[in-house]
Image 1 (cartoon, rainbow, N blue to C red):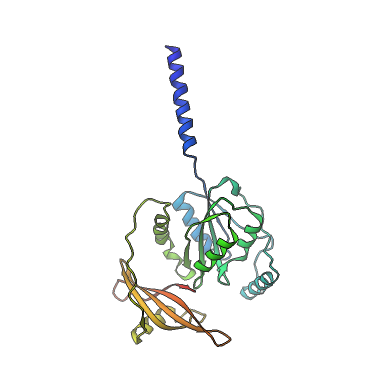
Image 2 (image 1 turned 180 degrees about the horizontal axis):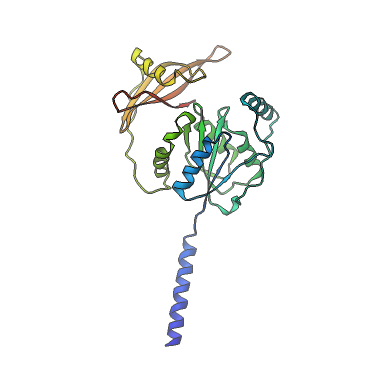
Length: 272
């Protein structure tokens, strides 16, 4: 009887070990750089929603000057192909399978401290999920640069939010995590945009209402298309901007007009 009991206990223990071995645990880390605490807000939301660990990127020489000083320093670093030295992380990145990598967008790409991280920390073999905050846009351009800088990592689609509307991040992150398969659920299929049409006076009014207060020129709207979502009407404006050499460059501006009566048009994102 005792032999049978010992055999049964051994078998159960072996099954448990085999089961755990067949399905190794996946560990996630929210790793971010934040200069003004906006990206930190999004990082903490991600930590709460995913249960991941969290760590921040800190530079040995902080970017603690004013806006113009940061620009001058970054331009020098770009010109000399330099990256800031970062302090040793609290967490050991080697212990994690998935890295949520957060940053503000500077000059259309990830902030320079991320370049320092990439130079000092090996992210090969990791699943990297970018998230960023920005004044107008930069999610797509910064993600493209990350793909080039991290050829040994698997990059998933990223999430970005304008600093001016970071209060919308919580709800948007819920949808984003379902979209990339991190959380269970199913999102409704989004309708296609309508055909592009030349802008009308009414379209220009919507564009100006959403973007008129933005401190930098975003371009002149020339075409527009739209689609109806459950929370309002989503507009994609094509805008033209003149370059210093006289050429015209086109980009896209996304604006949402909520379905509530009298809802103000909201500037969501710009894409090059």
